[in-house]
Length: 617
Image (tube, rainbow, N blue to C red; front, side):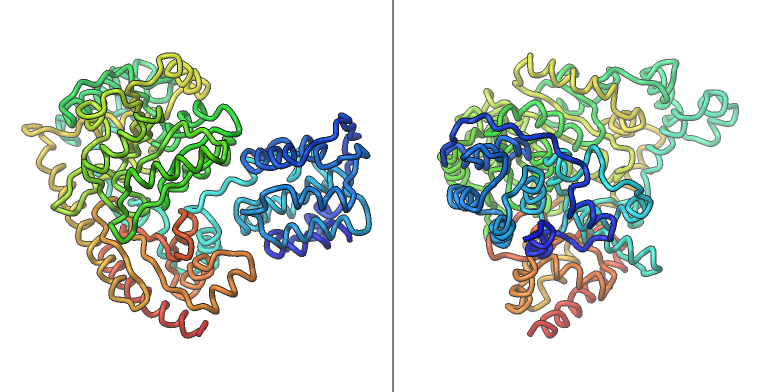
């Protein structure tokens, strides 16, 4: 059977392509280097190990091919393919892919290049991923002039190819296309407050403007004191002095401006009541780049793993795939308000060790994203004890620490828990200017603090940060402003506090409006949003919709989210993109749009759900 014909059996695993793309995938116009097997006869165990390794990091396709090629002929016979299929763990790969591989080998032996193309189709991170890439690259595809390229789908980084970030996935890309056609879209897919109407905090923008303007047009302008409050001018002078005479357009120290890191350390010390050192603080391009730095230093072998909550914020699964690590999920208990227990953690660790994995780090997200729970101290201590007991580094994602709406809950930092209850815990904590009441996502400001981290690893992460020279200076200034806002007695204190209070009270009302509205819809249930910016409802799907999704190799909540978008213009993220308990379906939505728009959206959620259930009845 021809390669492309066989791959078509994978259904949506290989999307429909334009002619030029189809030709490049279906034929081998560039001759692959001659394959020379080593001659050793591999065992089924080695094939299985190599397959697991390839699934983990996308590397080793040639070694895997060699292990399957038992007779060393440089091609795969039907018997060799059958032996491979029967000797490896086939879970996590669409069953149709295995049928396609066997069908491909029916009438000719498979070359290395054909096998690698099968790997591309069979090991997509998600069925729709390559379709997304092709759709968003239409202009590039149409301008392509070559039939083959030196770096292509089968020999590029397979880790990058398989990486997926659901928050900017298929549903969002369809929303962008509809908006380009003139449709009005309500984007509730991502925590991007300013994009849906939240106003910037005035004092922060005033200081940033004065930092960026030339002195003669800003802080030294004769009218500066009449245009800006005195504390904004003073703070801008201070920030400019900290950055240096070259100004905000120059590189800074790779760890961040020393004075701004001192601001962060002072903030942490005041928040927790325990000492913090600026030497342990890295200023970063948001929390995401800090997480990537730490995970880059963490994964050393194909068997190194990160424990992540399920559901999780998909930056973790995306980086695990990109960096060649392994993912071990621990399930949060939805019925118990998305709680985590030591028993669940121990069970998942035992299973991962039985599978040959080494868990080196564990992520905790508090307040939760996408789940919105605020963890109590007992739960935090349970996580800290577990990590300390098993020599696991704890990664504490705390970017929503000011977004707590439940008056019976309070944010407690993992650093405070560590110092007071588990002092030998190895910990990295993350914070960001993108959330809270600031919402300055585009500034890319944030920090991480290291506690009890090996000094040599600390130095190597500094080296990694140095390779990027420094984080954005505007983000560094914004981080300093976040941790040291106007204080009582300052000229801007009262107006700044009033702006924050207005944002907070509105978010609090919107959280209740969204959750109560979703819970009023038959077939939808949603836990209380105690914090953060999201609701994560569970949706009962009609059996026929589930069967349709299964037949097409997609998640049913992806079908649901696309239907919601087409019918109402509301863009949400399918819950499957965050991970969830088997059999569950739903979506994540922010409650960031204006209250009037949010009330209308809740009504549209209800009407769409009724229509969707009727359509698939």
